[in-house]
Length: 425
Image: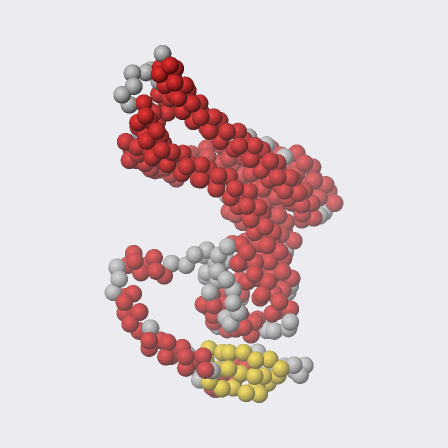
């Protein structure tokens, strides 16, 4: 395959340009005509020459990779799943190109030259190649499950079938943008507590292992009984300085046991139950899950995805096992001809407000609109819940740190008073 840069004109008179990966110039001309364009200029792309030179230079690297063990080659070649923001940006770029009037293959070809963080140009190249071979865009995307989820593929397929692919891509972009914003709020809310806990733990460890042993040398040789808080502090200091390795092993063992427990079906369900039932944090988790469920299901239904397929995809996208089980039971009952609201209410997992809004949507024949209202309601409540959580976490952390500092001061000062009283006697 070689690359050929071309400039062509549409029937409307508009000039377009791009790059094709084809065998020769004749094949490039045929491809341009298939796109409904009139070629003006077709020439070997400079990129092809550079790529050939790079391939020669990269021969040694490929040979080096080939010489590595299979597991190391897999690590080097492993692709990561794109972030929500990255997938939203990619989708928006493709939607903009299609809206400008570009044919799909030309738009995908242009995507190979656009900078899209987190999604390499190889993804667009493979999509373009599959589409040129006659596959639908959704089928081409289904071949890359790491990048494009079932939700994404089914949305695109619905857009292809309805002839509204550009509109569907815009909705997908908005969908991922919204979830990215929610994810960012959670991350931002956890940064401050994590920073304070980390710094506080480091300071406490240094104090117990370095400063306190030096300070306690003052009392060596003195025949005085140290106060209980001081003896407790000294015992902790000995534990930190003499058995730090045992503490690390204990932490590692706890993490390993927790991970194994988490890997079992029962463990996952138990942990997910703790998450949504925890005080303060659990409410925020529930609000996020309710909003995610409503938003995802609404997006699928609005774009013509069948109800059962939409419920299946929504179930797969939910991170909480208890919510997934409730959706699975709902899907089974909807198969029997029941409405959405009735089986959701029977699960006793979803709130009554969601059930009531869904009933209204079913009565008016606008379930996607009702789900949008549900999503908006819980997104607003989620913003309030995150602010409330942060307003509670900060004073709690201050109180805990104050108690820790007070204990240290009490232990040291009470020892000093004991020593002063002994000298006075």
